[in-house]
Length: 554
Image (tube, rainbow, N blue to C red; front, side, top):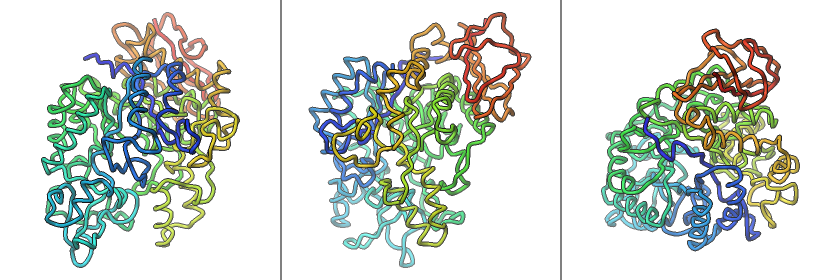
């Protein structure tokens, strides 16, 4: 298997708005991030992925970009970014930028020109279509509720937006658009960044025309994911690779909603002609409904094991896995798969970090930060949650209290509450008024307290990261084969990692109950050295709730 620095790295995602505020305006910023470089170095990560920091009117918290070559005013200046990049590099930490090029803001100069007249030079930078039967061209829905088409009075046509109406989709079939994007990417690479996480990159190639309505599956609109893995997406990414990516030593990861195992092998193929890895979302969708995100159910561990194993085995030797449960779009995993306890946070982390792939730690995950009890819909800031509440209740499809309960469980805002640095005012995030409410459990879950407790979730993550990056078992953890044990066990996730240098046995009781677990007879050992946990290895194990153990087998 080819070795690469990004395979051997651990990535830490920062959502800048909620990480650390240096100037007291209630919004996190670049200088706040820079002040926490020593903290991140202590944790042991060596790559930072920054959610968007570009100029934006913030309809979707920075994922609606009005200026790719400028920094969002609330976050600081380009000089602040340069200082952050230099200080991170000095600490041995690389910076990966969020690349958002499926769409722009409607306030981007390209779109301002595009909507100015049907004859404008940039009209074809976006996707415009005439009305059909007096309404939108298709029934396609936005992923933020409502139609994916917005009527523009001035030119008498609809434009396509698979997200907010202030996020019009770019027309990637126009080579001038691709030129603009590749020029911008080159500009950032020349500045010295170390890679790109590519937002909804599987959506850049739209379906072949003529376009038709899609099934509504009981909702008001057809699925927004109709555009995933379109006919030219690999062609576009191969062009991006030739013109930009291959010229620099980068880490690239694509957010690929709707990706299949076979498609992932194309995006992240080992010949390096497209991307290094992708984010697939099957595993984090296991507690959802068939067509509706807003349900409240727990993940079934057997389904989770089956899904993660499919990706571990299916990509081995031909592509590379991204290991994650949390990001800016996902509720906290300790509240979904765990029970909010530090023990469950540690167990989930052990289960994931011992797998093959590049792990991603989302800010606060290393502290065991939980979902937040927001209360009424007025306390939410996420456009997806707010729009869904309004649309589904007004249409009479959901009862308010029942839907609000589901939103509390699944809202993206759960990941966006301020980072909990201390037990002091506003969790030490800001001296001002936070842009979104602080989780009230900050007095017990915070970095200051955990740094003083050697048994904390923080130090557990630090150990897992150290084992992967610099230990006698690093080669096994990064590159070793994966084999699932006991697939039908409803409580225990156990697997083997093995390479030419040794063998590891991982056993995690992902339940709040004490259980017995029998090690299968085909797993043999003469000596078992505990490297996570301290239990002796027996054929039949008595596991406490959320107990996680890793042994080196001889």
